[in-house]
Length: 449
Ligand SMILES: Nc1ncnc2c1ncn2[C@@H]1O[C@H](COP(=O)(O)OP(=O)(O)OP(=O)(O)O)[C@@H](O)[C@H]1O
Image 1 (cartoon, rainbow, N blue to C red):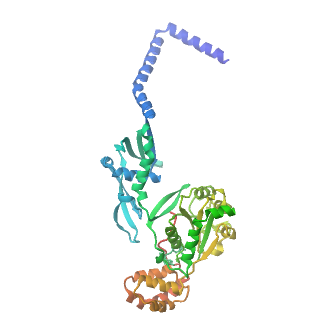
Image 2 (cartoon, rainbow, N blue to C red):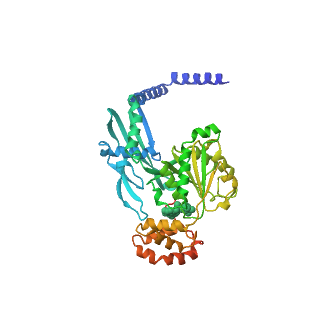
Image 3 (cartoon, rainbow, N blue to C red):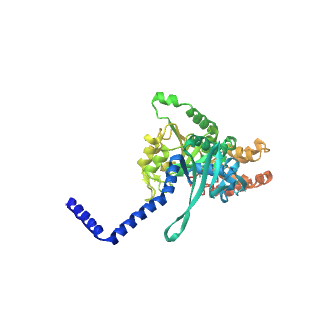
């Protein structure tokens, strides 16, 4: 059938062209046009093929962390300074080597820095004797009705294929000149889809700035440090190499601050995850837990926020209770992971979530004890004699105020010991009545955005 169709078709063509000069001319023109078009395209095609063969292109998307290092690095190169279309990026507490311009601090005491990054154009660099074409670009993202949604930014680097070996060196240099230059800072990572991104770099909080009951801080720190050296023992015992801590107690008594201080002291960064993060599904949680950066502990804040017992608190919760348990101790859970969970409502937690293996140590952090209040008083006013600090602290009944409230009171009277002492009754009387009803405001809370 198909065969007959082709025979008929060829017959029709040959009869048409043999007896029809007009059709013959048309065919010739068509062929010539095609040849001309081919010839016209040939040089650019050749160039494209040569380009593809001889060069290498690297694209770095704006949402990748390497984009920040590479654009800041590029902007600092002599040839990078020739790029004329620049943008300003403002960051809080994020230092990027010498590429920041510190502009001040905000009302909360957070450092504000800005830096210039190239947005478009191209520049040819010579890097370690190799040519490199750098092209920053950005594209508009429009939604319905051409509404501007934002921009996507890309940095494209092109170099000769033979120069490929300089890439690791280039990336390392860009990193060490920028983000890597921040040794001694604590990085706070937050979820970015199925991965983590640095949201903030802050100074490590000195352990001495925190006042806990008895030797709580020293005790937990010793435990964390010991865990870091225990891998072989865990392997020998056949126990998964993980350790979990549950910090529970009323708000504003230093649960988050403890985690931050411990991480700093142990040289770890923090990945903060709030289970109430929108669109957190079983799969996403599992992906996040299996992609934790090296040398970072996991902080699950307010683990009571999404489940009461095993029941989701709202129909919009995508995470299942079993998904949470599996992510915590399933195959993807990751070896060597340190997990801290915090809650203000211990009673709302299902025992399975905090059983040993998931939360090996339960640490209660209560409202301020007399000794803690005296300790904080002496931190604000080192000149205050110990006995006097103790006497003032004793006027506040044990565990009625949060440490955050005491801190707030002292902050308001910073540098003014007389006011701190003479107003003391105000803290004891007025605040006591509301202390239990109203949680104190917390400023330095580590939260996922
Ligand atoms: N034990 C403490 N020693 C010194 N400062 C403290 C202590 N507890 C709390 N603070 C201060 O109170 C503020 C709040 O502390 P933090 O956010 O760590 O409390 P939290 O228990 O995690 O609160 P929440 O349960 O609301 O998350 C911080 O600014 C911190 O400096």
